[in-house]
Structures are given as structure tokens and as C-alpha cells.
Length: 332
Image (tube, rainbow, N blue to C red; front, side, top):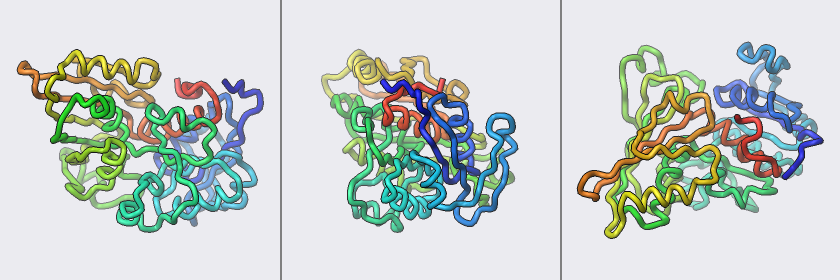
């Protein structure tokens, strides 16, 4: 375990968005980090972040890849997909370790990547998919991590132990709901207060890139329907599946215990179904489940904070494992 006697020089690009500010908040207090650079997106002016006064008082500068690579050894990218697709390779060629929170490099299949992220270049080496609980071993020492998406984080953590154990059968239906911060900080008609408040809407039906990410990690087809709900943060997923022949509720509970007994940020709730308020502003993923009296139908309920376990917190968790620190460092 790394003793962190010499803090890691860390930079953040895209530091003024919702996820970027959350990263600054976590990294400024991280005992193994020296936050040496914070930059906005391409063309963004220098500015301070009022919400971080007396936590981190430096100025967020305009994006300069050369300066960023000079000041930092590890760099978090909280940039839009197209910008991250350009910046990540430039930093890697300069020998920097990159933790990318965009979707640009998550998909391994070239055809799927071209469809959903057409600006992403071919990479000489694939990044590690940054879902700590699934790829903890591969993260150690890694130089390039493509952090998992927010919706996929919740879905994969809930489903992967059951799919791998062949305890559930298709169809698998993921009814997912996200707070408005999941759409990012750039305003749009869909995220306007007057459009969101007092309403709820489905979007991206059969056309959301996170479905490809979920299917990549699970290896089975899913029906994924995301919804926008009038909350500032949080993800709530209700997942429906059929219990496989020969499986039962005890086997499902055992699979979860085996998968996450040593995972500090996954909390198994059993029949006590979780709520968004239980995980807001934390790096926890809460998973609950119930099987109907016939033993044939399974309902999973999983909740995370989209800005923490779904983005900034998970990136810091990946950073901790990559550098040999306790994965809880700076997150409790």
C-alpha cells in the first residue's frame, strides 16, 4: 500500500462543470494529492469557483495542454466527449496518467465507438474500464482509465454478479432515472427549469449510448430506458429480470455477498430498498432486491449519486487503486 509521503501532482481539465467542481472538492482535501492545475474547457476564460471558497481558492485557467502536462503527473478529464477524445491522447504521449470521465474511450468495439463517439481516435493501447469493483486488479499501475458512465455504474454493479452466476434470464429491463445534473452544465431546452420542474420524461429510447456500455460489460442484451426527473442529483434504477431455473433468493443474496463483501462503497440492502437520499453526496452504491412469492420474478433497486459514484468519486476511487492507495482515501 502506497504511504503517500510524496503527494501526487494532480490536474483537472473541465474544472468548471458539475463533475469538475465535484472533482476539485474531493481532490483539494485528498491527503495524497497536491492539486497543481485546474483548467476549464477549450476557450473557457479564467475564473474562480465561489462554491469552493476556503476549500480551494485558486483560479481555474483556460485549457493549455502543454502547461497542464508540465504541472501535473496525473490528470482528470471532465471534458465533453469530443474534447476528451483530443486531449487524452496528447497527454498520454507526454507520459501523463489520464483518468477520463467522458465516454470517449469506454467502448472497446471499434464499430460501436464510431457510432456513438465518432470523434474518438484509435488508440495504440486500450484503457482500463474504470469501474473499480469490477476491474480493481487491472487498475493497479494503469496509466489510462476510461471511467464508467453514471447509468452503467448502477446497472452493472447490480446485474453483473447475477449475470455471471447465471442466476437471471432475459429479458432484462432497466428503468433508469437521473437528476438534471446528469445532463451536464450546458443549458438546453430539455434542462430548462420550466421544462423539468413538476415533470418527468423518457429520452434516448433504443438510442442511448449507455445501453452499449452496459451490454459490453454484461455480455447480454438489455432494454435500457432513461428518464429525466426534477432532482439536482442522483440516479435511481429499477431493474426487472426473470429468475433462472434452479436459482432462488438465497442464491441471489449469496452472489451479491461474494461479489461485494470486500467492497467499501457497495452497500447491500436486501429487501430494504434504497432511496436517492441515502446516497446523495456520497460514493456509495446501494443495491436492494426482492423476489416475488412464486420465485420467478426479480426486482432490483439501485441508487447512486451521479456526480460522485457516477463520476468524480469513482474517478478518485480509480486513482487511488491505480496509485496503490487505500481506495477509500479522500472519499470517506
